[in-house]
Image 1 (cartoon, rainbow, N blue to C red):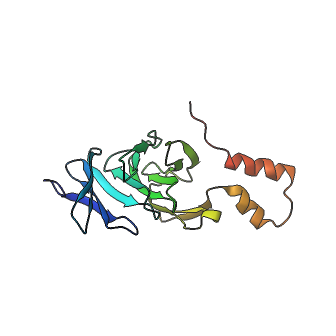
Image 2: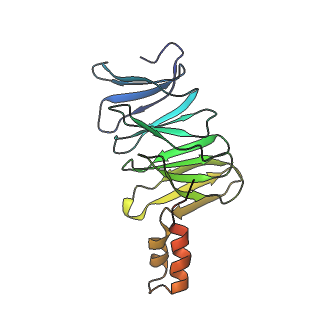
Image 3: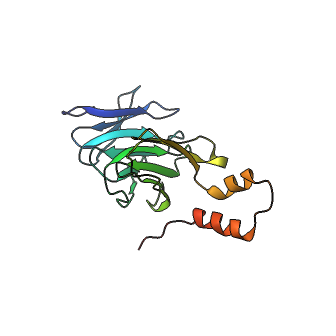
Length: 193
């Protein structure tokens, strides 16, 4: 089932017998491990490198070896969304939020993006330093969604996806108008034309 040129990466769908494989022949194959029945066999992207299910199993993310974008797929239908090549260099890490609604990508260019899994629309951008991002992930707490990221220079950062609740938690008092404005600007979505 892995194709003639082999399997590059593979993942089990949570609470299921389905297995997804990104294959060296640039295809995604999903099959039932118990029955060996094919569920999905579709073109993917040139040189896929990784494939991973969300914890809910409702989404699948795939990243290419040299690509500055990632694909998010519905594993039942094959419907997909893709970010708009926001990174200027290859993506080095990707993660889906536990519910599969948000995607996190990090790149060799030092940028991190959180984007909507359905539309591909960017929601949050973090630059930090120019050091390449090597690994990043969401925590599992949807009520206090945070990101952890590790860089090639050895730094690790943790930050809230929505900074306003974190700011309020740090300061158990009413925020001043200046603080509200500053925190509100941090939480504003990115605008692209």
